[in-house]
Amino acid sequence: MSRIRRLSIYCAITVALLVLHACSPLVNLPGKQIAEPRIEKEFFVTIDGSQLPLRSWLPKDSPAKAAIVALHGFNDYSNSFSSPGSYLSSHGIACYAYDQRGFGKTPDRGLWSGDDAYANDLTSFVKEIRKRHPRVPLYVLGESMGGAVTIVATTGSNPPNIDGVILVAPAVWGRQTMPWYQRWLLAVTSHTVPWMELTGKSLHISPSDNIEMLRALGRDPLVIKGTRIDAMYGLSNLMDEALSQAERLQLPTLVQYGEHDQVIPKEPLFLMLEKMPKTTRKAFYDHGYHMLLRDLQGEKPLADIVAWIDDHSNPLPYGTDSWR
Image (tube, rainbow, N blue to C red; front, side, top):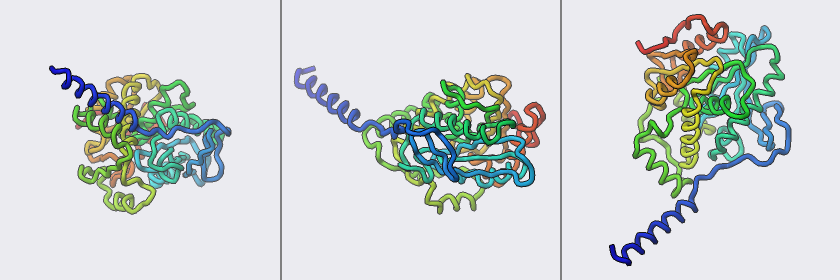
């Protein structure tokens, strides 16, 4: 190889590295601690003073027999638990959900805040809910991305004080189960055009069989339609961590997954289950999609959640522990 050619290659590599460094994915980290986490009316105020919109669904005629903190999925927000929350509250279970950083009506909507931020927010919020319901079991229900946050938080150094975990179609599609071209494309674009937004319309994925609900999401301005590539990169990092830490999840756990889930493939889901303790309760639904709790048959997995909370050892009314 000639000296000129070697020099050209060296210059090209140097320029590429400079470009990658200059365009690294943005992580919108929380600010310094300026307050104690607290609940104020319709907001959860975090340690850096961020106001995360809060929704709750409470039993009307009797004290709550249990409480659930529900974490929404990627690009969604707390309103995703409107129907599930109403169902749970009608069965004596208090349900609370907040918009996670970068989603819904939160500041800096569309920006990713990092694994630690999401996990620490959950731990702080659970502490506040414990104050409201000190003498009943408290669970975290994580849907999709919320499931990944739940795993990372409960297996981390600052875990929430909870009695169990419910993972609904958890986002554990780590890089080890992604096609090589998908990993390569994400790595390149996140370090060259991290601000670019993608819609995913060309993928033709059906997240639910509830068409009216999906149309309502399409009309909802708070549901993110165009996703920054660096947010996808952050989500991939979170899913990597969740999949690797699943074996450390020792709390009573219910995992729910639909046969027709086109968002989280079966391979990473079953890999996660192989890592988890044998006591993990599995519930599979032949007609379920990714948005399992909002499907046309969403009351079935919701009924299973109620039954599992009542008694972890009893058979579930609908979900099966293996594919039929």
